[in-house]
Length: 371
Image (tube, rainbow, N blue to C red; front, side, top):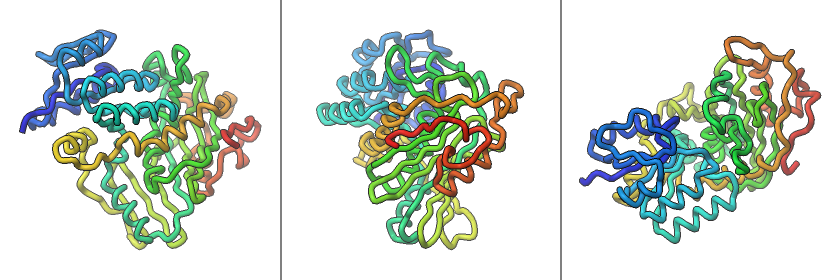
């Protein structure tokens, strides 16, 4: 089997993670790295791999079969379009784009070029998600009424200064939306939407920030899907004890719990979560699509509901900043005292923070989109 030629646009920052992930498939003879592109000097480029500051020059000279786009979201449309027009299939870092017009433009570009875009929502590669969807379709949970995500992480001051677009709503006049929902918890949001793959009807959000950034670090997001099912996402980057961002599906005959990172799934009647084996990376899945037509796990069309949600969040009023006296500050971390309990209650009840009585949210202004 001939190795697939792969190039990476955005070779620094998170691009280093992609470069590490390319080592193993290269050793197996599945791919060969033929080019790196980044406007900044590339850190530790591999021997023998050409480096470019201009992605267009790289595409023209090395003619890769697959291009990985790992750049800020506001650059995805132009870079991915260039790669498709150069004849490559694309693995694009999440979030794909930040409004439906750009999403639809990329879908049209796929059709025009005959190439495909796989969005790097790793949660969609979970075989436990496939098992969960099958159980829901078979009626094992009865009628699904709510899907909830609870995630409590900690991110320090350094996280919010990691790049020029960190914590920004816009960069150079283009939307960025580098907050908890569109970036670190995007995988969980997308996976919750993928349980049913239904159109989004309504988006409501209550969000806040614990430091002077432009985006939210703590949020409750309620999405109403076609048929009336709600998705409630309750997350923070200023949490107390760690909660990974696992999903609970509530049906009238029972509940299911999914931990996508570990591929653990507990269905109604199971005494404990069970490991579901068979995970592959989204790059492997893209290579299998190219070789034999294996369906894409995270194709661009499937991620359209996520973009619909992000577009609505762009229209929402900015998150409000909480008072300093409700925070515990230590070693660059700002912890919102009591946040885990509040978010756990929101996830269970399907409520936004501003629908509960909380010491740091009750006086905050209403922050709902389409509300």
